[in-house]
Image (cartoon, rainbow, N blue to C red):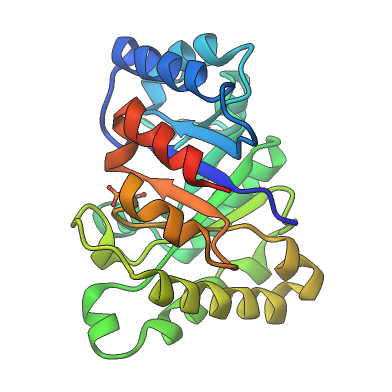
Length: 252
Ligand code: PGA
C-alpha cells in the first residue's frame, strides 16, 4: 500500500521569517491528525535553514525546489544537492514546468539533477505533464510517455524509495482550472503503466504519483481518492496553513 504524500511547493514566496512561521503552523497542525500522510514543504533555498530549524523534531519533511547538475565548482548562482542535504533537506523537486519553461531545463539536466540528488541521499520529486495546446490536440499521452521515457530509464538508481513522480498538467497550474478526478486518474493509471514498461511492474506498483495543478481543499479529497493518485504537489494553496492542512487531512 502506497503511503500518500502531500507536498507544498512554495515557489518564489516566503523569505526566512515568513517561511519559518508557516512551517511552524504546518508542524503544529499535522500531529493532531489520525492517520497523517507524509507531509513535505519546499521553501526557497534561502529559507531552508530557518525552516530546518523549525522542523527539527517534527515529522514534516523539508525539500528544495531545484538543485544544480553539479556538486561543486565554478557555477555561479547554483546550489548543489549535497549542500541541500547538509542544510536539512530530504527531498528536491526536479523538472517543474516553470523551470522547463523559464529556465529552459532539458531532459539531460533532469537526469543529472536526479542522479546528483540520489547520490546526496535526497528523494527526487520528478514533475511532468502536458501543456494546454498538447491536450487540445489530444497529445497528452504521447507527451507524458515521452517525458517519462526521456528520464526514468537513464537514471542511475530509479527506485520508488528515492523517487516520486508528480503529474502536473501545465494548463492546471496556478490557473484555478483543475483536471477532473477522472482526467487525472486516467493519466495517472497511464503513467503507472509506462513506469511498468520502463522500470518493471514492481517499481510501478510502489511508485508514488502525485497530482499537481490547482489542488485545493475542495477538490483534494476527490482527486486523492482515485486509485492511482498518491497525494498532491500543491502551489498556491500550500501558502496558507489552514488550506494546506485541510488538504493533508483529505489525504486518506
Ligand atoms: P498550483 O501549483 O497548486 O498553484 O496550481 C502547483 C505546482 O506548480 O506545483
